[in-house]
Length: 99
Image (cartoon, rainbow, N blue to C red):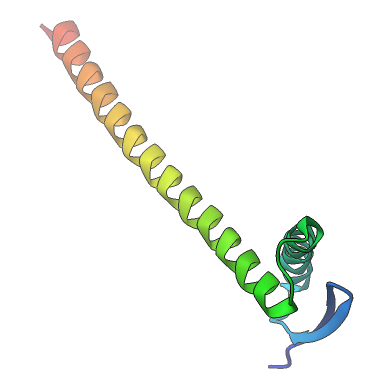
């Protein structure tokens, strides 16, 4: 299966990346997000060097991703608890109606 090559620009450098067919737009979106993160870090003037900027951007993105996963898990747990409470209330209501 041929993988299309997508060219993305990150901090003025073009990179040709093989990408599964149908995921080109996702790759471009990810590259644009990374590019924006790296630009912000570079613009701060505190970090010098492409490698350091890339590592810091990767750490920031990973932190955001992990925080979002924790938030999603907490929401899933809360939803399970609410569903359980609703099931109990409906079961109780059904028993009252049938009596």
